[in-house]
Length: 226
Image (cartoon, rainbow, N blue to C red):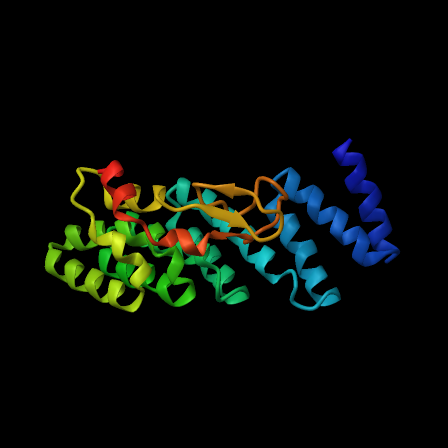
């Protein structure tokens, strides 16, 4: 059924009938079957038809390809796709995380730290997503004091991240920090304890964000976690 739908839509596209609407249907179809390369081709066409509104979604498609490459330990392709994602959407935190993880798995911990720290410029409320990875990279390099200095500066700049100091729990900092946050989709209101790049509720991309007032953890909640 999907194949027939694709052929019908492609035939309409060749005749340039209802071009924008057909492209929108096609990109949803390719997204459903995870044909990210084809989705990118149609997405680039939509960018020309509909200004830059589609760019953040195209960045996510590059990240999907890059994530699959990273799972195969194809670091070069992962980095290439993530770089393309950030070129299209400089605010794509997912691309930054992908680059950082690729460097980390390659053993280039200094490059990984520099990359992860860039999240602060993109969206400081997402720093709990990378704090544990930064800490691990500093430990790999044997720079524990550097981590403490960096963490202190981070909390000074963003007071709501004070809870990141409470890291001596026997748990990895990453696990402690992230599980305290809640996220909400700006489009449909879906809430979760986990960050999704695509909302499970409405399928929107890059719409799930930290709930601001929950970035500050009170002492009682933290004691229960510890």
